[in-house]
Image 1 (cartoon, rainbow, N blue to C red):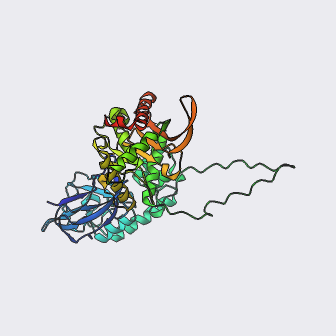
Image 2: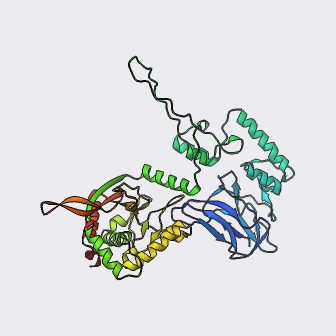
Image 3: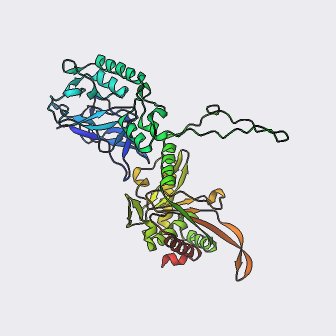
Length: 460
């Protein structure tokens, strides 16, 4: 029977995947194990291999479409096989970047052959008409069939009728866009559509921002200083290209900032013991040991002793994580990546240093795999090497907390009642209050500070 090609789920929280490209054209032969398509998730671009050999047929998604995971987007047909009938398969509506699934009616229909799709009442759709409909975001089931077959002329006539509908004042929009607009309480007429004939798509609703209300203009009174020149009008400045990776980062951080109830704890820690430990460890290791490696070690130990801070907030529940999978924030050209050190609590210092260096190198060279970015339970973000004293980081959902690390700097502190200069380090713990309360977070931070000041306690 025909082998379904579905949009894979490559991440725990992934709901959709963007189809970047097909490696095989429709109607061409593909072998099992060969690259079939490339899919973008919110983490990396992943090459998906064919799971069967045969002819690629019934392609329902094109490059740029965002498709719900688990949705059939094509078939691989063996010799003598044909595409399944609509009564046994799912029917799709197309729209640029807005592919949606609609369950087929339970009416029998004749099976279609390679390269054909079905329309209203199971009518066969010519390949040209199907492609034309896909390009214009047209639901084939809405087009009346003449003689049991939908031709390109039928699609053209339908598009003309849609233009007439638009002229009558009705806002054209995809079903997903209408649903999102209802959820946000936004009038579709206020959103500029980027789809065919100005249709509003889901991405238009997601990216829509209300127009800012200009501040009242005050007239100048005698004796007052002249007002500043007006700011450049929108569009006068030069635009900065935003990569897809940066857009994903911006979306995720915006969601975190607007949905996660953050609170912060700050702690200054004496770093002399940490520096001594690094010198001693380096003298016994052929792998370069950094302060970041030591922080990973002591943080993993502290999290193992305070598992609530290592938990996650998922679907309204606190989920305990059995291992400490430490994420390390790494700045790259296109934004921020967080590769993960799995089971960090069980790793020795040399293993941490080796694995961390390899992860950072892969991140900076664009060679991270999806597994490198998955499963994190806690994140460390270190900006000390950039001369930053302290900062507040944004929690990376579904994690419960993130640790922001500043630089080690000499400061005057009280030692036995007398001023003394000591190397100090500022830690800022950002927490999701749904998972961790202030007392739990404080106990964890106190444990971590103690391990930094007396590193041998991490080996107990």
